Image (cartoon, rainbow, N blue to C red; front, side, top):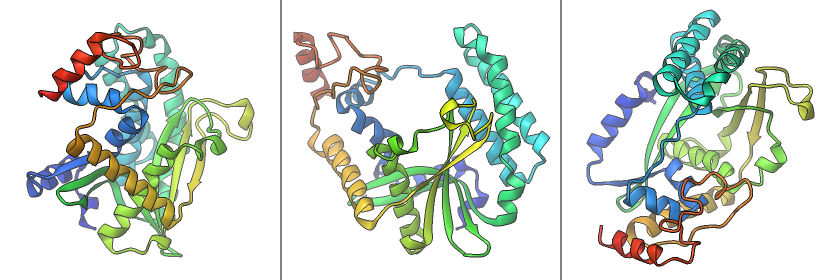
Length: 305
């Protein structure tokens, strides 16, 4: 498992050089495809990807970076807080200096500092052996098709020897765990990471645990035991059948996207779901839920690309 000492970008460049001509699907691409195959098609083939930079995205990336460096370099807590401050400040001023989100800058900065102080990298290192930070997966699915993923943290319990796959999730509030565990895409991420990490390293599936760790910005009335910045571990359990179903879904996505070249109908969800945040919502030219001749023309154009 020598990857743990390599920078994520270096790991990925090495993998690309060793896998020229191979086609991959990342978990983020798979999740977009599952949410709406039609939107995925527009963004992939027409390159109409919207700028989704937001204070939430910048905040999450800054938190991830501070924790990642803290674990790799065994830095002190105030050093990690400084890393967060500098990263958050720089990215906000470089990308959103005139954006309405700037009114929340100070609030998010304070909340991020709280989170970093709650994440005790010292306690993690004391209890666990660090196997990988931002661990890169680039594993064969079938034929010339590969799965690509990045795991935030992999550790091994120093007493039991069990592996734990950890994914950090920043959130404005504590999660409704029961609701989350009914979300198949949410569950698929950990199932896929678990399977491909196990296969890559020859580790039995039953020796690997999976855990989301929710980093809460705010105190939530529903979860009064969780304070500002506190952590909410969410264990993800999966049977071999669960994992197999997730793998088949990814394989089907690759087949649909790269082999069949099917042009899927959009999945309607007007509530707070797929359509609610879609930049192509109500666009007669791009969204094929609209009865429009433009959509037919768009489909014909895509087939020629």
